[in-house]
Image (tube, rainbow, N blue to C red; front, side):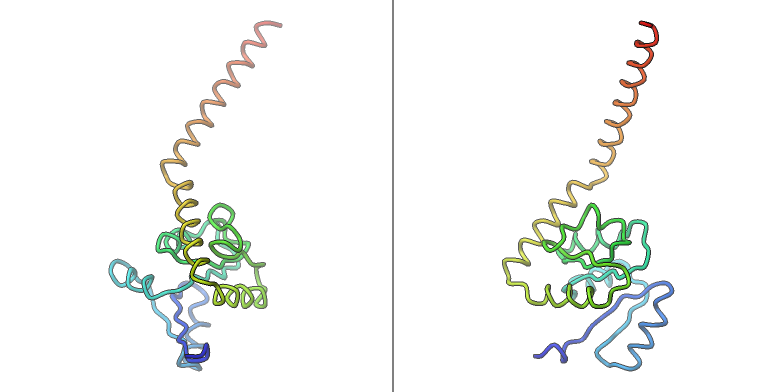
Length: 163
Protein backbone atom coordinates (compact mmCIF):
# COMPACT_ATOMS: atom_id res chain seq x y z
CA UNK A 1 0.00 0.00 0.00
CA UNK A 2 1.37 3.41 -0.92
CA UNK A 3 1.02 6.50 1.22
CA UNK A 4 -1.57 7.83 -1.21
CA UNK A 5 -3.77 4.78 -0.48
CA UNK A 6 -3.86 5.34 3.27
CA UNK A 7 -6.76 7.04 4.95
CA UNK A 8 -6.00 10.03 7.11
CA UNK A 9 -8.44 10.37 9.99
CA UNK A 10 -8.92 13.52 12.00
CA UNK A 11 -10.72 14.12 15.28
CA UNK A 12 -11.72 17.72 14.91
CA UNK A 13 -12.95 20.22 17.44
CA UNK A 14 -13.42 23.96 17.59
CA UNK A 15 -12.85 26.46 14.82
CA UNK A 16 -10.88 24.12 12.55
CA UNK A 17 -13.74 21.64 12.25
CA UNK A 18 -15.21 23.46 9.24
CA UNK A 19 -11.85 23.35 7.44
CA UNK A 20 -11.32 19.63 8.00
CA UNK A 21 -14.91 18.83 7.03
CA UNK A 22 -14.35 20.76 3.79
CA UNK A 23 -11.15 18.75 3.19
CA UNK A 24 -13.05 15.53 3.85
CA UNK A 25 -15.68 16.53 1.30
CA UNK A 26 -12.95 16.93 -1.33
CA UNK A 27 -10.82 13.87 -0.47
CA UNK A 28 -12.26 10.45 0.45
CA UNK A 29 -9.04 9.58 2.32
CA UNK A 30 -9.91 12.16 4.99
CA UNK A 31 -12.55 11.30 7.59
CA UNK A 32 -13.69 13.49 10.44
CA UNK A 33 -15.16 12.54 13.80
CA UNK A 34 -16.99 14.71 16.25
CA UNK A 35 -16.58 14.50 19.99
CA UNK A 36 -15.61 11.00 21.15
CA UNK A 37 -15.52 9.54 24.64
CA UNK A 38 -15.44 6.15 26.30
CA UNK A 39 -15.08 3.06 24.11
CA UNK A 40 -15.27 4.96 20.78
CA UNK A 41 -12.41 7.22 21.89
CA UNK A 42 -10.34 4.22 23.01
CA UNK A 43 -11.00 2.56 19.64
CA UNK A 44 -9.93 5.71 17.81
CA UNK A 45 -6.63 5.83 19.71
CA UNK A 46 -6.01 2.12 19.00
CA UNK A 47 -6.49 2.77 15.29
CA UNK A 48 -4.18 5.79 15.27
CA UNK A 49 -0.47 5.81 14.48
CA UNK A 50 0.42 9.42 15.32
CA UNK A 51 -1.36 12.23 17.17
CA UNK A 52 -0.98 15.61 15.46
CA UNK A 53 -1.89 18.76 17.41
CA UNK A 54 -1.26 21.68 15.01
CA UNK A 55 -2.78 24.30 17.32
CA UNK A 56 -2.11 27.99 16.86
CA UNK A 57 -2.45 28.34 20.64
CA UNK A 58 -3.18 25.79 23.34
CA UNK A 59 -2.32 26.68 26.95
CA UNK A 60 -1.74 23.02 27.80
CA UNK A 61 -3.42 20.33 25.66
CA UNK A 62 -4.65 17.36 27.66
CA UNK A 63 -5.01 15.44 24.41
CA UNK A 64 -1.19 15.19 24.40
CA UNK A 65 -1.34 13.19 27.66
CA UNK A 66 -4.00 10.95 26.14
CA UNK A 67 -2.01 10.26 22.99
CA UNK A 68 1.21 9.54 24.86
CA UNK A 69 -0.63 7.28 27.31
CA UNK A 70 -1.82 5.27 24.30
CA UNK A 71 1.77 4.89 23.09
CA UNK A 72 1.46 7.35 20.22
CA UNK A 73 4.19 9.71 19.10
CA UNK A 74 2.86 13.27 19.11
CA UNK A 75 3.55 16.09 16.68
CA UNK A 76 2.55 19.48 18.04
CA UNK A 77 3.32 23.13 17.59
CA UNK A 78 5.50 25.23 19.84
CA UNK A 79 2.32 26.94 21.08
CA UNK A 80 1.02 23.80 22.84
CA UNK A 81 2.12 24.10 26.46
CA UNK A 82 2.28 20.35 27.15
CA UNK A 83 5.07 20.02 24.60
CA UNK A 84 7.56 21.65 26.93
CA UNK A 85 7.18 18.90 29.52
CA UNK A 86 6.01 15.87 27.56
CA UNK A 87 7.74 15.85 24.18
CA UNK A 88 11.39 14.89 23.82
CA UNK A 89 11.81 16.33 20.34
CA UNK A 90 12.73 13.62 17.86
CA UNK A 91 12.31 10.83 20.42
CA UNK A 92 8.59 10.56 21.27
CA UNK A 93 7.39 13.15 18.81
CA UNK A 94 8.22 16.51 17.35
CA UNK A 95 7.63 20.15 18.26
CA UNK A 96 7.25 22.27 15.12
CA UNK A 97 6.96 26.03 14.65
CA UNK A 98 3.38 27.24 14.69
CA UNK A 99 2.06 27.92 11.22
CA UNK A 100 4.80 26.03 9.38
CA UNK A 101 3.10 23.49 7.15
CA UNK A 102 6.54 22.43 5.86
CA UNK A 103 7.82 21.63 9.36
CA UNK A 104 4.59 19.75 10.07
CA UNK A 105 4.97 17.73 6.86
CA UNK A 106 8.66 17.06 7.63
CA UNK A 107 7.78 15.74 11.10
CA UNK A 108 5.08 13.47 9.68
CA UNK A 109 7.51 12.20 7.06
CA UNK A 110 10.18 11.57 9.71
CA UNK A 111 7.83 9.51 11.88
CA UNK A 112 6.60 7.54 8.88
CA UNK A 113 10.20 6.43 8.32
CA UNK A 114 10.80 5.25 11.91
CA UNK A 115 12.11 1.74 12.41
CA UNK A 116 10.32 -0.53 14.94
CA UNK A 117 13.01 0.26 17.55
CA UNK A 118 12.23 3.98 17.30
CA UNK A 119 8.51 3.31 17.88
CA UNK A 120 9.36 1.24 20.97
CA UNK A 121 11.76 3.90 22.27
CA UNK A 122 9.12 6.61 21.73
CA UNK A 123 6.54 4.69 23.77
CA UNK A 124 9.06 4.09 26.58
CA UNK A 125 10.11 7.74 26.69
CA UNK A 126 6.48 8.84 26.74
CA UNK A 127 5.78 6.57 29.70
CA UNK A 128 8.77 8.01 31.57
CA UNK A 129 7.69 11.60 30.89
CA UNK A 130 4.07 10.92 31.85
CA UNK A 131 5.15 9.36 35.15
CA UNK A 132 7.28 12.42 35.86
CA UNK A 133 4.31 14.70 35.11
CA UNK A 134 1.72 12.83 37.19
CA UNK A 135 -0.72 14.59 39.51
CA UNK A 136 1.11 13.07 42.45
CA UNK A 137 4.41 14.52 41.22
CA UNK A 138 2.74 17.88 40.63
CA UNK A 139 1.37 17.90 44.18
CA UNK A 140 4.75 16.83 45.51
CA UNK A 141 6.42 19.71 43.68
CA UNK A 142 3.83 22.18 44.96
CA UNK A 143 4.31 21.00 48.57
CA UNK A 144 8.09 21.24 48.20
CA UNK A 145 7.72 24.75 46.79
CA UNK A 146 5.56 25.75 49.75
CA UNK A 147 8.11 24.31 52.18
CA UNK A 148 10.88 26.29 50.51
CA UNK A 149 8.79 29.46 50.73
CA UNK A 150 8.19 28.89 54.45
CA UNK A 151 11.90 28.29 55.04
CA UNK A 152 12.74 31.46 53.14
CA UNK A 153 10.29 33.55 55.17
CA UNK A 154 11.67 32.11 58.42
CA UNK A 155 15.21 33.00 57.39
CA UNK A 156 14.11 36.53 56.52
CA UNK A 157 12.44 36.93 59.92
CA UNK A 158 15.50 35.56 61.71
CA UNK A 159 17.73 37.87 59.72
CA UNK A 160 15.58 40.88 60.64
CA UNK A 161 15.73 39.92 64.31
CA UNK A 162 19.50 39.64 64.12
CA UNK A 163 19.92 43.18 62.74
